[in-house]
Image (tube, rainbow, N blue to C red; front, side, top):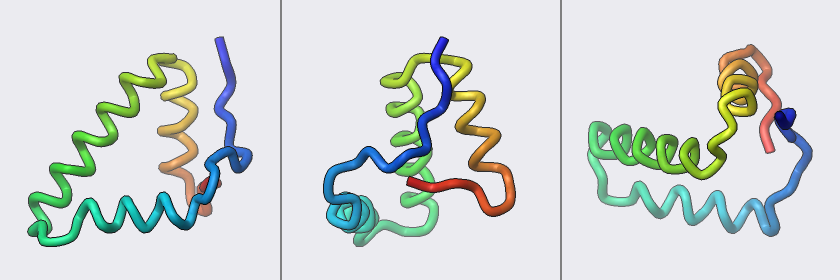
Length: 68
């Protein structure tokens, strides 16, 4: 069982964030929310470690949550 890694690990995070924003261009709020939900489920499936996912959900819910 692994622990959640919140240390920066993404190469060129600003570029990736720009790609994430571009994914939402032209979408309504409802379409954007649905795209986010699908992306979350796809990434959860990729991670596949239930304990890590629980830790990530707890971290995301916490005020001042650590972000990568």
